[in-house]
Image (cartoon, rainbow, N blue to C red; front, side, top):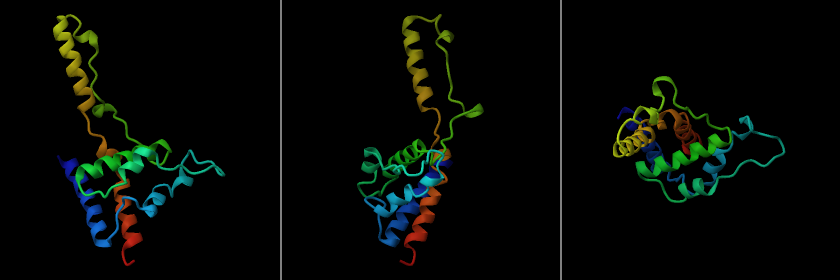
Length: 156
């Protein structure tokens, strides 16, 4: 819950700045350019090659005004993954105590076919819904967006 509250506060900080500065991140060429402005710092950067452009999923995420937690969560998630593809974000993968759980089929192979089917279903559910990596991966980008909005639009 603490992580959700942190994300919600960050999203609200951006929403508040959009209202205060009368600007939207959606359909904002300045924001789009800023999201790739650190391209020369990427390990994937090659001089004289074109810089990346948003893919259809990121563009769609930022095509309508963002007003809710869910809208921001989806848009920022798409942006973070897109940026990580180009070496602009470093995604945190689970390790040690944060490892995703794994239950090998051999641990329930002695069960009936029905129980094995249920074990597989529950194992998949636990594995795919166990861990929320957003707080580890959406920062510092969310903080940088707030700072960029302040630097770009405060006093403009």
